Length: 487
Ligand SMILES: [Zn+2]
Image (cartoon, rainbow, N blue to C red; front, side):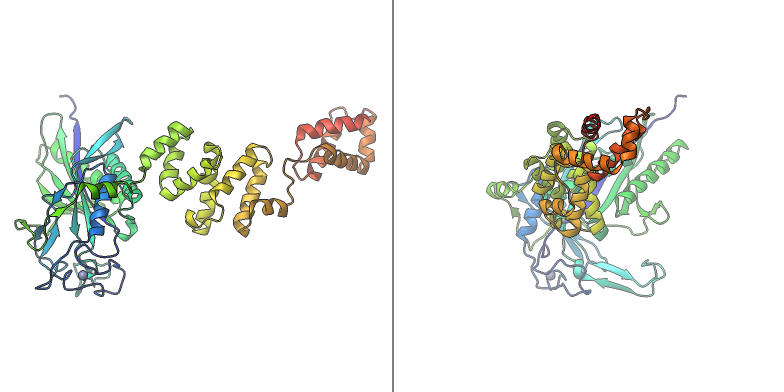
């Protein structure tokens, strides 16, 4: 029997918190770090008689996120009530665009196992409100064993975008690249800051297996992943688990499983998620978006990071790695481009930013926007090295001095006693004359022809280099010294 081949078929659902000062259907602050239950009102608590109203700023954020995923925008979309009971949901229903979403289909490109670009299709992005959060009194925050549970509704009604992919993902690695690329593009668009450590991005994965003997495993929905690492591990675990069942001739059950990050396993979810049927939200009119509005929001879209990185590779000669690092943060990429526009060689400017600038930002915990060396000035440093006015060592010394003392370029060069362009001509001859004068015995040995191997010559050359503070060029010193010794 030939060996069975299993192909994972994976779809990913992502929730991203959209950037907005106020909630989706009321004017409460979205600050979820405030004291519990302080940013709430009758609307986000769903009290009788309260009416939700659409936050147009969030609609624009949703459009920007959609553009970042190469999606189109629907001129008319709807909101629905997704009814279920849970203590974190005060209304008894969540308002979501599940059925007629704000965007049409889109895609994100990733590399497959052979390194070729492939498209992961995005079915759609829709807007919905988040629910409240529960805090359990068990020491590790679990529900089991807790004597008391607390509910905080500050998060209730904060705006989310749910992004649903087609089952085009074929491995955990592809899944990670998909969510990483997607996150970076959404941040660039300005739709969200997507801070992972603040829980602004959450993942669910639908995993099933296709076997070369024609069998298809059932789809398993894995929930509760809050980091790239968790998503990767959960998918890898599920692939192994399902493959094992199918190899033993068993059948994978269709179910919802919960990822336990501490144990590194998925287990059947005990909470049955049974939604009643969705009804159109009677308190909200359809969302109409005019072409003029779409165009206006689209004009705010910057060049996307992967497109930008490609341009750096193909037009500026950077390596893919350097281009990826520089475009990871839009502000760093802007800094790099300003530097190049100011006349710096792109490859050398990229090297300076990746090594020196990023090192200082790391050490000082600063963001590039607060960095005291402006891109035009870094460009000047790079140019002076290229023009041999400064050696690389000197340039780094100057750069460090500027960072540490918040000083200007020319002032720093002066303070460090560096003579740009090195020591040559009369200044060099003067140093040589002084060195020879101070070492008459060495001079005598050389002139008597005893310096067979040039050791004494090298000794004098070293002294001259030292006197020039390393700024003279060794070749020029050798020539000028030879000439001086002949006199
Ligand atoms: Zn509110």
